[in-house]
Amino acid sequence: MSDAVPSAAPGTAGLDWRKGALPGLRGPSRGFVVHALAALAALLALNWLVVTYAPLEIKMIGSSYLIFFYHLPAAISMGILYTAMMVFSVAYLRTRRPVWDRRARSAAEVGFLANMVLLVTGSTWAKAAWNVWWVWSDPRLMSAAVMSLIYLGYLMLQGAVEEPQRRRQISAVYGTLAFINLPVVHYSIQWFGQTSHPMKFDSMSTASIIDTKRFALFAFFLLYAVIYRWAYDRTTRTERVEDALQRIRRIEERSQT
Amino acid sequence: MSGTTAPPSDFAVYRTLVRWDWLREMKRKSTLISMGMMGLITLFLFSFAIPLTSDKADVLVDTRAGILWVTFLFAATIGIDRAFRNDAESGLLEGLLLAPISRPTLYYARVTSTLLFIVALQVVLLVLFLVLFNQRLEGEGLWGLIAATLATDIGFVTIGVMISAMTWSLPGGDVLLRILLFPMLLPIFNVAVEITDRAFEGQAPLTKHLGMLFAIDVLFLGAGHLLFEHLVKDSGGRP
Image (tube, rainbow over all chains, first blue to last red):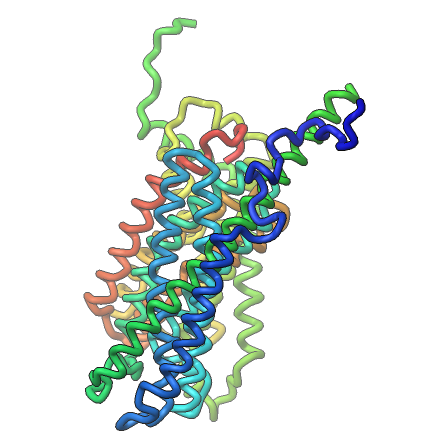
């Protein structure tokens, strides 16, 4: 062999990063960088809008309302990502194509992140407005917390099952069950306590607040989409390497017998 | 060997499976005894965790429904965890999966037998609770509690058996079962405690509460019917 580059190890065929098999291995793609920079810029612009454009105080709750611009996008993104995760899980169960499992996993990871942002911003607001970090009797706080526990269970499941096919199967079923349970969690808890969670303030319908809210949604959708993309690439990469490892093991076993 | 006998109907298979589970448990009693012990220990833990002196009787009035349900939950989870584990350890499960039994039939049979064990357990634990904590249940409250407990158990078992089928073969599966199951059960638990609270006051459950339990049961049962198959399909004979 005159070629200086060693030929690929047996079992690793198809693992060539130059052909895009291992996304992100040699640094992020140009498209990803542009996307990430755009999200970062939008986030900075949002902070600037919040500080300079939106009114710093509104009636009744003062300046603590400003966290709403970070809280609302998290709630909506969480809803979208959890729904997407259920759709991907069902798609996996129907087609058995691993790509759906990777999408479901990534959506669950980012959905859980949005869920955490939701809880932390909500809790911070509660400290400012109610002077406590946590209110056990508030239905909205509780249903968001229970959802986070359910999806944390999904993420734990990922590390608990070794065999990839089995893991995909269990995750997809659990992902679907979790989503079916969401309305139950939401409504059953809402029916019991009276919430003191503000849904809308009359003084919030000014043009500057509505503009900022729209921009906040845009900025955070961009941001969560970048994180999803990153999570998906990482999952794909890990899975490809794991597949190759399994193939190598099988070849080794065969050569020993 | 005639070879021409018609295969048994799904219902006959279901009945046989439930009967087999019940008879085997009556012979060994290992699951029932573990569940009962766990329940008893939980009750004792509560007697230390909350003040039960006569001048603080209010505390027990506020917490009794919760105590009862936490006890039920901890004890019943052992039964849920063993829904497949016992069979798998004895190698029976492989045979069951190879036999021409429809997956929903197997699911319903497991749900029914687990439900039977849990109801048997709850009868004992409820009596123990009433005696040890000096409580009374009568009239509408008692019947309300029975109806609500059955409805809660159905929700509990339908989703529990699903998660048990996911976790029994995993390392640390028993812990994972609880981590996955408990958050899913919180809504149903919430309603059950509410109804039990009313029952101790001698009041019948609200239609709203029973309706919610019923809706959750139907939802979970439907989900189990559709999804259980996916947990046992192409998995090399393992559920």
